Length: 329
Image (cartoon, rainbow, N blue to C red; front, side, top):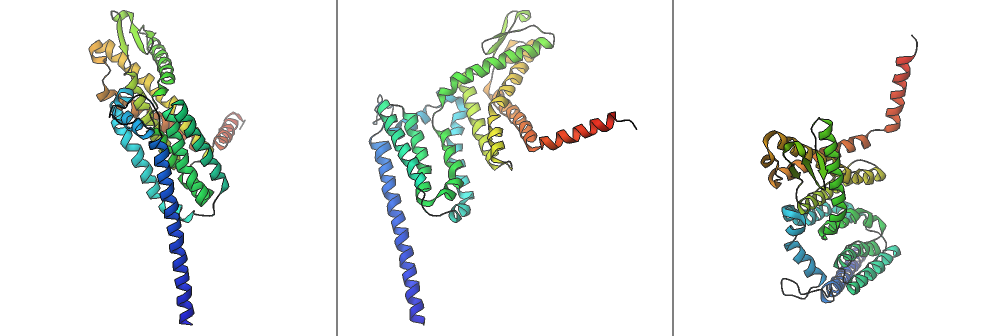
């Protein structure tokens, strides 16, 4: 009896070791292939500042080093916060991830194929951002294929969060339009308070103040603030106790919240400039960045509170109160 038990235990242990060895071997092969595809055969752009061959990884690292030109000083925080947040979320959910391991899913193979094709297109067309996005999709598609949909569902957000590590400075064009709208709204508020001003691009001109012109923060700093705010709200929306659809709606409120905050900050600049002079309203990142992010967060949390409420039930209660108020006694 004991000999049979020992034989079964030995067989189980050997099978477990063989499976782990197989997984380790597959993971090693995949890491090697990823290194070859994204580093050995990367983007053939101009020589990198570091003097190395400008592959996808080196291009991204060089952009991290010079990111202050595109995102302002906030980028020094952003490039460390996002990878740390990804690893932290994976560590927090390690037990759920371990329990979610199941059978392979062929849809994951489709994700892998699409990611590899996207990388090929990125290399051929010399679009390193597309190549890096394909790497993020590959990081999600491989576990999806090997361990099934349950595990892929647990890790999709921390992997998707890595998108904020990719240089997103191409968003400066839509952000410029948002800044123009914020300047127009700010001019309307100040004119409504009885002080004359005219919107000028992303600033305000005050004819009564001797032609005083007040501008917003630099475009690079504003873009860095918005991306940092967007990464933070994505994490908060993910951990919020809302249905999935409302989580996406909550995250979609990031841009309007930042636009409202920019409008309020520019309005405050205009009022300070009229009261204390144009020198006091010069945009300074030391106080404008924390103020903009704080106001954006407050507006966003107001949107969160609205989504938390049951709108149908609230409307029903309001109609009942109105009916009781106007009903004859």
